[in-house]
Image (cartoon, rainbow, N blue to C red):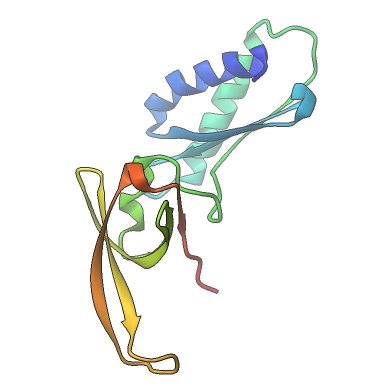
Length: 155
């Protein structure tokens, strides 16, 4: 990460506390001309508050001495298709279908609860390939065992 990126990240980490959001990811284009920071919240992410935060950070970076190098700063939500990377993102997805990759493989199920870093999923087990009849199985996965967690999008 560039020195500019590190300075901006430090500001984002400090200032985000006052806005009720937190950093969940960052991405930098080669050469450091594009700095992207992805923010989320424990509840629904308020886009007006997100815009207010981005403007606040832009004002602060304009006041800093970051050198003569030109760069573009983007602060946004992670988007629906990105991996959930912070345990604080999980509670707002209760009731949704999660796709979780672990060492043992891929697990898909309805997210039921989160207790002490243990995710509880309800997995449907169909009786046969074309059957609509199924039974359910409760699965518990430790947050630390999940390599990747995504919300399954419905189209």
